[in-house]
Length: 287
Image 1 (cartoon, rainbow, N blue to C red):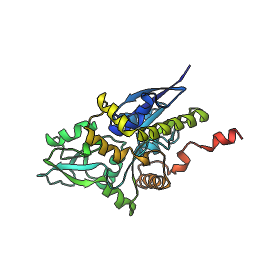
Image 2: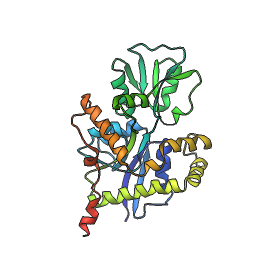
Image 3: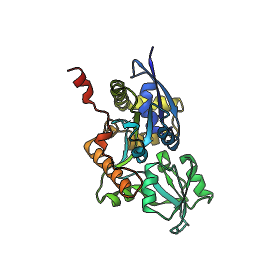
Image 4: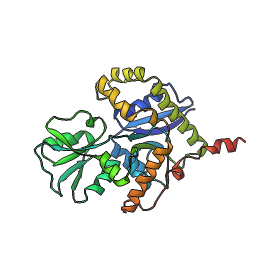
């Protein structure tokens, strides 16, 4: 009998792209994955309650999960000169206490936004509802994420890039940590290593067969964007840098966790290397 693993990912194009090499049966022999596609803040909340075996999360929530969940090295999304955008109507001048819509309390963009705009009045909405909330004057501004950053109403303009906030806090240009995946520490280590290997292979396979997989996703209406926009979006967030964490990405994560700790958002300072599955377990076990 196949082992069933409950996995959560967001419905945005990069998560769909990286997961569906498994759903189409290209990788994952011996393991049956039961997936749920949910908005990122719902996934963050479920991860906080340990409701899924593996879940996509915002990196901004991970220090609150550290004791119960390990970080996976694969399926990561970073911004390099780009990322979520704070947008408003062109005619709007923002006051210090402007009302803003964010995509979730525990998202990375919310963490950085709250540091940069401590007096802003925040409401949380599903990321698909934020643009309309601005257009209807329910809020003064909003932070757009996922595919929303590529194509929004012409009456809106970018007030500030979250990337710029990130660089100012770091005093250097490092990749902006947006989202990754975590796994329950209660899962046996040998199985956790196997699962990380399967997911890493899924990302590599998706990238290797990118035109075919993109076409299949479009034909099945599994993504919300056009062919051309899908290619551009995947180039941003599901690329070679998504396969496995690099030393530069690890440095960026360490900085994110340090910033959150120093601002009193996280209860303890953690280091990325301490959060990862010990890959040398398999070789030591078989030596």
